[in-house]
Image (tube, rainbow, N blue to C red; front, side, top):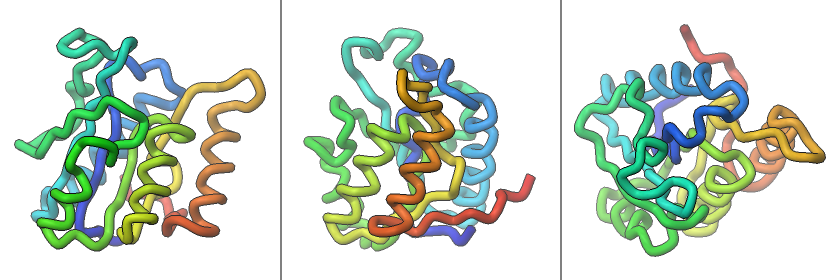
Length: 166
């Protein structure tokens, strides 16, 4: 998968560690982080704060296994990472045109990031399987993920399906 101008790592926090395939997701995200760091492309971590991910609590913390290298951390308080975070302005200031996203949760923050980023004129991209979620009453996490990736590929983002190198 080619490197975009920016990598956004969304809500990879201890409170989501029970999501389907979470440990595998962290390993895959670390491989992307290594690629971006090696290419000297910027990375931004989004860190959600809400009633369940209470600021400064252990569940709020970013996963300690992430290959963080003095990257920017932007707090967010909504499933829309662009809402009241200054993220779009920061990206425009850096002259970012293309954004790769990864993280949690597929049907909430990741989906909203892709759709809002697209509507704000950014070229959005995601590697298939670089996001996850929880099973719902109606659908498994895998069904949710595959459904959203198909929708994104049809309208909002480039979805890369080549497996990541190990």
